[in-house]
Image 1: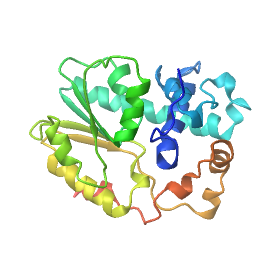
Image 2: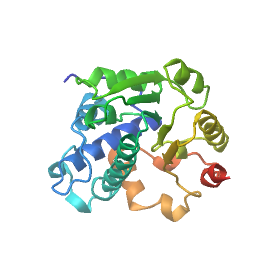
Image 3: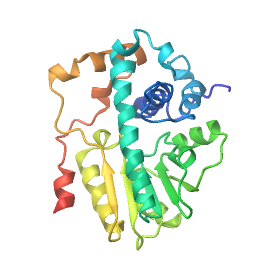
Length: 251
């Protein structure tokens, strides 16, 4: 596959989508794999910035002892398994629409055998979606509706225009997104999500409570990510105090 430049995933937060894709590719090839994604390595190889990154455990320098590809990547495998199970359970119990906010290089619409009648809405920036479309040579296993939208702006309107039904139960997923957003944007996002959610809707999301201490910022995982990939994750994280969205939703 020819390499693609100017993809929307070459720098900044966009590059973290390639980091997660590489982690999913490595997880796929583990003997004790928690989650499989046969498409992930194609994204990594297609982007020039990540073409040399490992996509198999045998390619990881130092193996499991590598703090980035051994320890950190295993976390992404676990996260994928947890969220896969959540979405599959929601679909099996009758929820027919799934919304992925900040979908990135997610391939759940392609790699999971969904029940009939499922619709998956993928929201992300237009350039990220364009890169995904350029790389993937596969048909989705269910109805898939990609939507170019910025979560810091009005994303409800394009979602509704794409056919989303706010009167039907929804399974929402916000994976690897919130800690990059300013607190005010996170608050607005959940207000919008709540307004669009019919009874029996569910949301699962990943949080990073609090702000990193200097000791955490200097951890071997973040140091290895900077050294091996030139990605400074703590600098990409938003530096506002994090809102307690869990409590807000409960109330």
